[in-house]
Length: 342
Image (cartoon, rainbow, N blue to C red):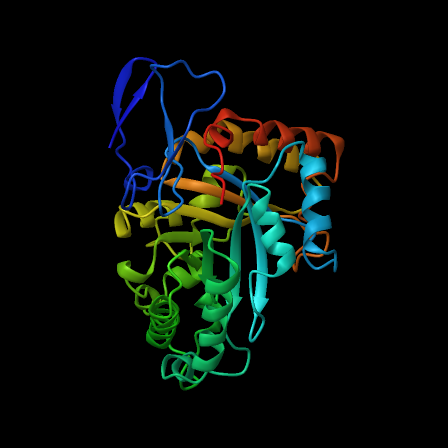
């Protein structure tokens, strides 16, 4: 795909910057001259200019999604391109509240675990087909807009020796769910395969066998957090460990394994560090300085919670962190492409 920017023709080298198919929806960011880039949103929701800016707001607090999104957008000083919500089992989605959020020029990232009691192998064999069919009917009847869908995210730590929970079983489950939804008319779901991406899991002999296949996966997702091994954005998306020397880091691995797929950092967050009170503000500054080194990353979706399992990931726990995060969100990289009307 060729892009014209400031009178110079540039070739979009990353496949994630090119349409998966079709021509998509065009928008022109403010300030661009007539000879500059026309930014395109493809039918797989890939922004050709920069990346989407998203959030999972007030997670684990019990706050209603609409109020949580409103508060988050006030706190960060800009609207969210993507809102990340979570569903399990028989819950139908998008809910009326989520549909209202999408009507406000936001994309939904819906994270669904089809069952809390059935194994992956059982789901692949049809154990919850009636649930999938009911969901398909609900989506086709209530929500024609495009949305992101990830199915049982972060499967690595659920792989075990119990029958029906192998990596191959996961891949079969994912494929079955996506195929059945599509067969029943759900053509507006853009699918995301979401990994933890941690070195200790990525070096397991079964890791590659989790992948369900290019035909049922549109985006690759990663859920990294800034633990003690992370000093900046580069070490977040390419975590390595000396006790797992063969692992190159998730972004490097993805470039080699999935060169044609856009990457979504579908959860990310920074924990408080008592010994480094400026860590969050410095960390967000590193994202602003380094994000353009990772052109295959086409979405960042922050996990904002005071009650995350390993600590407080709220982006505004100090005035310095709040300002640094807001400045990051104002970057042209995250504002160039506008969310299309649904």
